[in-house]
Image 1: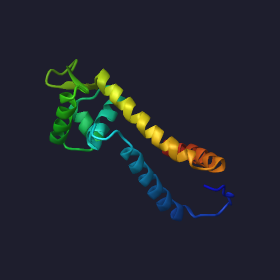
Image 2: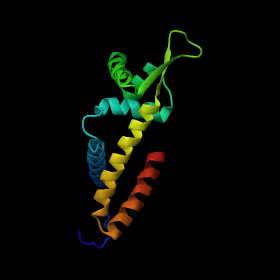
Image 3: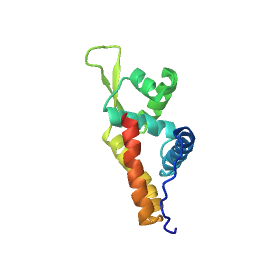
Length: 149
């Protein structure tokens, strides 16, 4: 790709918002697709990722985080358990509940997926000019700032 000169254009927020949202959505979708073939479904990976980030959750909490109904989450968790990626332990205060957490294998699987996604994105970024990468670095800082607001 060729280097482009960055020119300051005044874009109204109402016009920029849908463009930026669309670009972020498409990039996010494409990064999610950059995964080892045949390992996990996107929903299974999402649930495992949520457990990895939280450390441990009840099935109900996981369903809420993933915005799915509990019976759907039951099926997802069963598949993850079947593969040895999630373990159940008794809830410390409520005997009717269990706590779900990723196993060592589950954490290793998450790392494998993260490496594949990072590698895909790094390869795409390497195709850009240094100026474009610097611009994206600044954009990443701004997006993090917006996300924290």
